[in-house]
View 1 (spheres, rainbow, N blue to C red):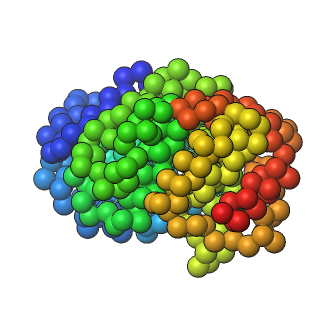
View 2 (view 1 turned 45 degrees about the vertical axis):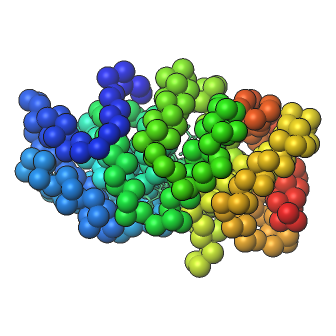
Length: 348
Ligand SMILES: NC(=O)c1ccc[n+]([C@@H]2O[C@H](COP(=O)([O-])OP(=O)(O)OC[C@H]3O[C@@H](n4cnc5c(N)ncnc54)[C@H](O)[C@@H]3O)[C@@H](O)[C@H]2O)c1
Ligand SMILES: O=C(O)C(=O)C[C@@H](O)[C@H](O)[C@H](O)COP(=O)(O)O
Ligand SMILES: [Zn+2]
């Protein structure tokens, strides 16, 4: 459900604004959800501005984006007798904002939550737009709800403690926003790679692109599917590797691979020129290592796309590019075509 009052604040030293929000009348209790990294790197920055609260700490990483972690959050809310006027503050990356948002959205049928994203990925993408959820049986975000946060506070200073691999992972969603909606930014900004001078500017533009699309279609009945470019193949690959200890890759790494595969599929259909495909591939391979899988695995990976949320029945609906900067959703593709695109990627 959309909350038209959601405010997204982007800037530094946002503690006082968060404090003002949490001091508003009508808030009974505050719960702050962190993971084992954000409790060290990010919580100390905000703690002086927080009213009395209960801290809920979870282990870090995609493998903990599970029902069991939700039970930890719901148990704490219950043990502390949180009522419907309690507010949950999610301080972390996309795993935490997705999961904390989901727990808040379902606890007693929904309490308010605030997103304080601390990774680039969560700042440009996950914290905005109201998709919340967890992984289930190895499938990405299989269980979840749409629920807009009360507010989003984005402070680029949090990126200072993020390692390069995580920064690159988040950058994939920035590139996705360029490829689906901002050809000019792709042309003029990609030379910087992750050595970005002004993250605030990049985050602002990326959030603006996402918000414009979400505002037009908050529940993903149509246009919002363009935000899923790279994810039909990307999620299949991420899910496949997630269940194999030691082979897991990050969400953005999977999306980067997925964007190459889906760009190839776009080119196969004459929607993307060979030159455009080459520029996308060259750029993405200048930033990301190649995802590791063998040709024999491509059919099994492709099969996982049958669980994609954009599908209708057995039809896999993919978002493809109609030239750089323009995306078209609901393009039917087959499992065989996905497997072929993975083999193309593997050969590159
Ligand atoms: N809801 C959405 O619209 C949406 C959009 C994109 C991605 N996602 C989801 O987001 C998740 C990925 O998010 P992510 O990449 O942020 O992963 P993440 O939440 O696992 O964070 C990555 C790592 O960085 C650590 N970390 C977080 N902030 C830090 C900081 N400031 N300094 C140092 N370490 C820090 C975390 O503890 C974790 O180990 C995936 O589950 C994906 O499905 C959701
Ligand atoms: O906000 C959206 O809509 C997106 O698709 C953004 C994606 O980057 C994000 O990974 C999202 O969680 C994917 O959603 P899903 O519905 O494919 O699970
Ligand atoms: Zn994503």
